[in-house]
Length: 278
Ligand SMILES: NC(=O)c1ccc[n+]([C@@H]2O[C@H](COP(=O)([O-])OP(=O)(O)OC[C@H]3O[C@@H](n4cnc5c(N)ncnc54)[C@H](OP(=O)(O)O)[C@@H]3O)[C@@H](O)[C@H]2O)c1
Image: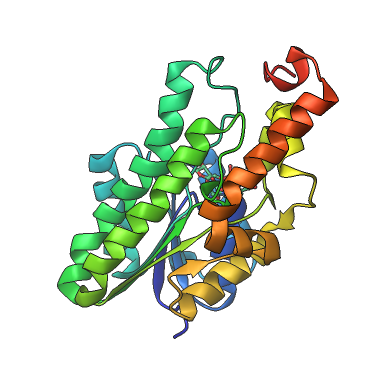
């Protein structure tokens, strides 16, 4: 079933969230974008209106997904103006790559609070209303980093893997209430987040992940919407991540052994592979 009507997108001012908004607007849908920075939100709105969208079809509301009360107010504001939301896409997320022993506790916690608790807060803000209406669609944006641990990404991987368990549990509760809960696991995607992240990515993580070309945000958004429309529980990207999605418990020990063997073999210095310093 196609996605029409009003969709709320957290993290809609940039990257994957913005690409989703653009696609929905081009189809004639109404979108509400939620993110923290009002100036960036306004720029996103201007860009969407420049595509020919009507003024009242693009709403932007500044809110932090870490603040459940504010998020609840934000969803109310969105629905008051643009009507009941048939779908939520929870795309807001952050990444701060650093080895665990070097990462300030605040940065570790902020990733968990934004990526995991921020999604739970976003879902909570729409969920009761969707339950009362007896329908709704929720798409959670996780990451391919949910499937296997990556050096330098302990908090990020933990937060994204936890989302899979969150979505699986919620789905069992939500389906009988008429609500579809989907989750997607994008690969490296060409967005402002990736541009900021790459210079901070520890060499060990590069070695572990290998070097594949990032996907365009537009293609990722297309696949996410197609997955939602097909009512998929999980949306994967590319052969490798699809295989990992299905087999990671069996494959991960092999990948870890291979990585540790390659690390030892290259006899790379601490600076390169064990400190995470750039
Ligand atoms: N790019 C990739 O390679 C990649 C790969 C896999 C998964 N992902 C996931 O895809 C999602 C989108 O990533 P992206 O690459 O599109 O990132 P992006 O371009 O940096 O966009 C992130 C969006 O989230 C918002 N945001 C961040 N923290 C927030 C908070 N606390 N409250 C409300 N909004 C917040 C940002 O706006 P403000 O900063 O103004 O709040 C922005 O709109 C994330 O969950 C990310 O983990 C990305």
